[in-house]
Image (cartoon, rainbow, N blue to C red; front, side):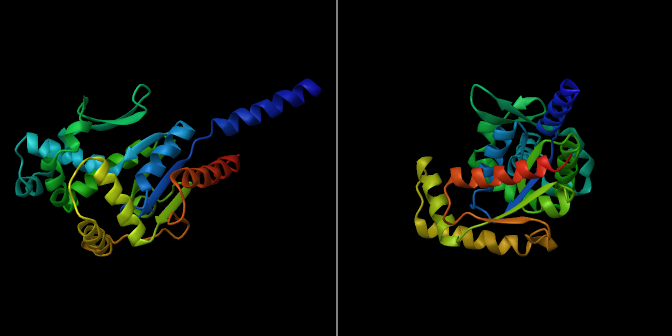
Length: 245
């Protein structure tokens, strides 16, 4: 009897540890969504789905194939030529982005892609395509996604939804430091203006304004380190996983 009880408890622990959920992280730009998503994914052994990288990958494909946006709008089936996937590299401790089987992380950071992705991301055909790809990835569970409408439109059934926010000035300082680390010359005032413009876009992009899901937990990262943000979010995730069974 005691052995059977022990077996039962071991089975329950095994079930909890192997129960996977989907985590949606939304919020303003430069508030730490991407970093938190990556840290959560690594801590839980989940797949990190980088929404921004997906849009950049589409942009890179269009550039390579010399497909202009007017042609794409009239021929949205061209998007079916694109396959985007993410794989965690143990050697690099990094979630790598693959476009049609080719790792393209370095190319996604080029100015050519950066200057084009803004236009690409505004196309409804592209947003619909990315949304469908994200939803397919989420079917397997164990996915962490960050973006602007992940918890409201992409995976509204995610078991844990986090809405990140931070003081605009703090966000600008963080973004400014990140840019300086890449040895890119820019003034702090320019970064502040960029944050302001992005916030305006977040509130008005073709009816797809940044909106907090009703059941999302707010995480204000203004006075929190990256480690503290991860610790808090990880405790939420573990709590949700524990109550699934």
